[in-house]
Image 1 (tube, helix red, strand yellow):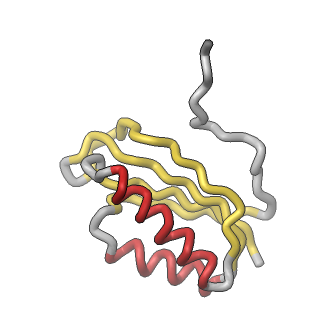
Image 2 (spheres, one colour; image 1 turned 180 degrees about the vertical axis):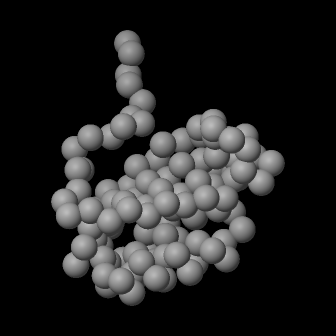
Length: 109
């Protein structure tokens, strides 16, 4: 099995309930197709560098998982027909960095 990171950019006008169901949908998809989700990071609503389909912002969800080619094929096939997702990126790694969260919100008290 190989390690992957998959970042999904969802539409900015989704409700909290829709975001939660989107997150669970891909979590279940990975776990149900010979994969194992190691970590899910919600980066929140961020500005896009360029407009994508007339959207200036997007909700970012980042998955770190272990899987096989079949897992990757199912994810990409589902993402392509999902109308709530405007962009995605999948990267293969030899080893995952699960300690660092680059978009973690700092508590400044």
